[in-house]
Length: 293
Image 1 (cartoon, helix red, strand yellow):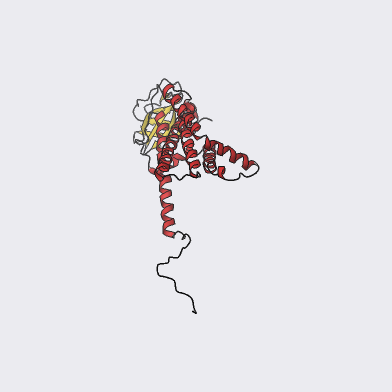
Image 2 (image 1 turned 60 degrees about the horizontal axis):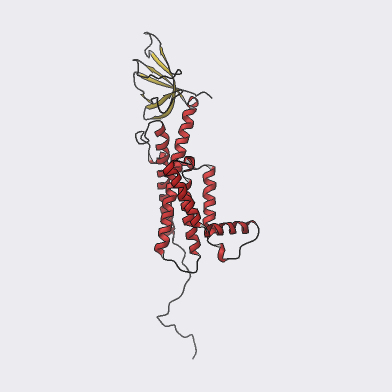
């Protein structure tokens, strides 16, 4: 019998994985970019709420937009945060993979053994995180590190999931999804606490060094209700022959939005002093001066 024997119609060709189409790649990029933008918006809201909350202001009353919230989230991108994120990714990626393989030599061997040990001890990491949460929540201990509790719980859950992923026994998708979603929730909690803490800390530092902020000199036709116990806030009457007769100095700018200047006096205290909202108009003129360095 000559020639090639024809294939039955029921046979199917076993082809390798097909490359993703440009449309699928574009949709994937758009989805990831949307998620990152939403996360940055959320972090920006938390950060600005904590920052301006120290000055008795709300970012929503200031009229901040989506882009401004996203930009404010970049304040969280400090060097320790970036290093911690890289370490977390390395630990989770390596933790569950080396036990079934021959570990490499040198420094990589030490790293792989350490991450493998951490993966096997993931329950200890989770318990340590829960203990920190209890210490913070119940007794207000370790407040500067209150974000460490949910972070340890998330790391422990991810390490446990990475270890189970390489186990011989197959695991259901539901069980894996529960662990990953729980870890994601704790990571979001970590980011929330860290953003709020950083915003509050930056606001306190700025309030402590408020003299270095941009200064305001306010001129008005009529006297304004700007009074403070701060000796730096000065009021001058320039005389009847001057249109803007009254001058106020010793103010520092917190933020300016839509013709409104939110200012505090030098030596401002969050618990006792006011924040002044000054609107520039025909009878009020505002001049900006450099802060004292």
